[in-house]
Image (cartoon, rainbow, N blue to C red; front, side):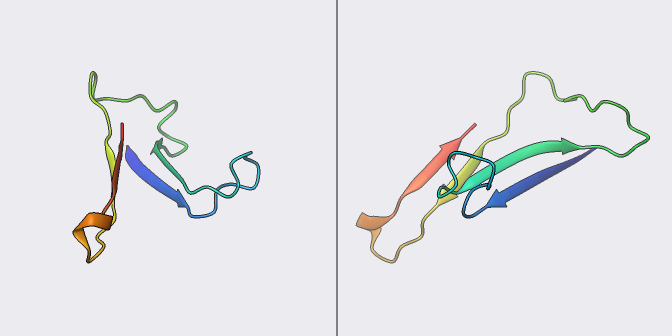
Amino acid sequence: YAFALQLCPHGRRSSPYMNYMGITFHLCSSLNNGLPEWQAGHRQVVLLGLDQDLDVIHRMSLSLS
């Protein structure tokens, strides 16, 4: 299997959150794979966004799992 990370800087047109940034993580499969299944049971994906502003007071981060 392959994993894909999709970044939509202005959201999706079909979403009610069109003006918000969107990030998705998903499994990819080919025609020969059938239905993909998460092979790492009891595991999760953590996405971390980090703002590296020069001023340490203004730095922000966001973690999603």
